[in-house]
Image (tube, rainbow, N blue to C red; front, side):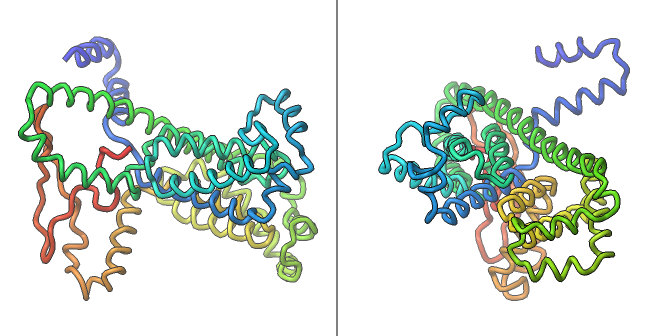
Length: 395
């Protein structure tokens, strides 16, 4: 009540349109977490990418990050004095300590990808990425720079609410705890309800701010890259990709690079299209035009991964682009996957069952458990809320 009074007082004298925008912004920030499936895709994507990256470099781990690296811990410490970086890998030059850190990094990446105690794992994952990045800062290709930024942003998000072990555990806990909550003390239940409300508000605000920062980061990355290319003469005359395809350092498939380089018109069109896509990307996010743009960017990143041998960078960018797809896209994708797993709608549940929306939740007074309302599904028990991801208790 006091909050409503303060908001009413603050809005007095303001134009009605401005007041509505302020209320809408306040509601969007505090009432509902946005892009929960997008956050889950970021968690799974970056956890998987870094896990594959560490496994790929496992035979060379000592030369890149370990005591046998030409970039010794002493040299790294000198650079840290100038840059302010820190790394757990430089705390000791003992080989056993490094192997323990490497094994821990593999385990943390796996658990973060699976969404096991995601809040704690997100902090540990960010620490792992920062430590390995700082230890061999000159051995990077640009992809781990983006993964480092995203790992820091994901600490603030509720990326474990969908498609995670936390979400599954929260659903099972809600089913088991419902009878106990109904018979519990009303006063204690009211206190728990108030604490849960405050916690939910804080989590929602942090999550929405984190997702907003991630979206802005990707827009700045594409926009600045496009504007930087516009200033270059080689991109303006359509010859930039010709020089890229002839760099020995970025030619994992020389025959394929030569074959593509022979099509001069194709190279020029690809140059202009790359610049156009990157510059226009921040301006097409609020319309349907973003879908073909995202598809073309996906093709561009696949080309970079294959022709230039930069799979980590391309994978990091593809995962970042996925955050702009709406939750309804991922829900539809989840329904298609479940339908395919059942052998198709013709061999499993009827089509009306597949398209059925998730069960609604009716909020009860403080101290009582929420009651799920929904039509029973034919041939099987009704799934709990958030069957494609997780309940609001998953953090």
